[in-house]
Image (cartoon, rainbow, N blue to C red; front, side, top):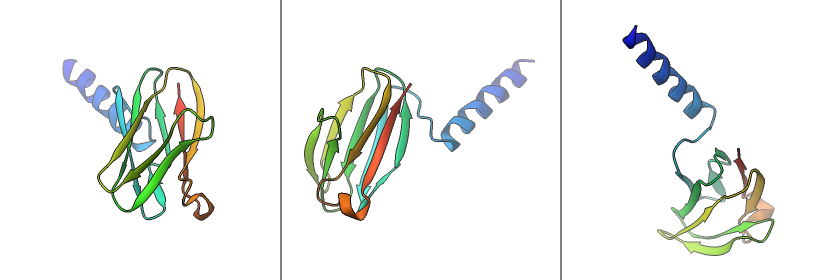
Length: 106
């Protein structure tokens, strides 16, 4: 019976990862080649998201104005999300190329 519980828990984690639901309090997004990976990330209230530039110069600009930071290759910007909702962000240098994303806070 214990093995079944462990297997069920492992399957739940695998499912959460496959549908883009992050777990824990720290989550990462990478800026590279005019896009963010993951484009949409789902986190819990109180979690922190860190954006890191893997290539080039980008910005992390939240549409609500709560974050607007330039990051170059190897640099990061972070924000802790204290409220539920959907928070849209973009790179102000590459927004017209579709470099946008969103953080969904549950």
